Image 1 (cartoon, rainbow, N blue to C red):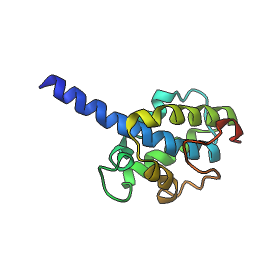
Image 2 (cartoon, helix red, strand yellow):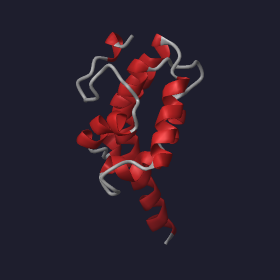
Image 3 (cartoon, one colour):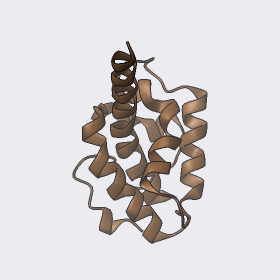
Length: 128
């Protein structure tokens, strides 16, 4: 039973990570990233978005998901930090099973006002 629960937790974290990657890429471009926000911290911040991002939840993200995404965006205070978060999400998103369409829609649903498109082809070095 312990293995089953561990696998379920890993799957949940995985799906959320992928979606987080896509969402964060967009949020980081528009936001100003703060020093000290690690890739792991960024992924963990989006855990409330997990079920939405992997497509197991409602059609719209929850208020808690949006609050978490907006909080992460506020932490992105430098260009370097936004680029690092962008790359983090780009690298980790696919392995978590994030639904690309849902990741792309998260900034709009959560009113993040991003200037970049969230997709797997984004060039993180172009983020300002």
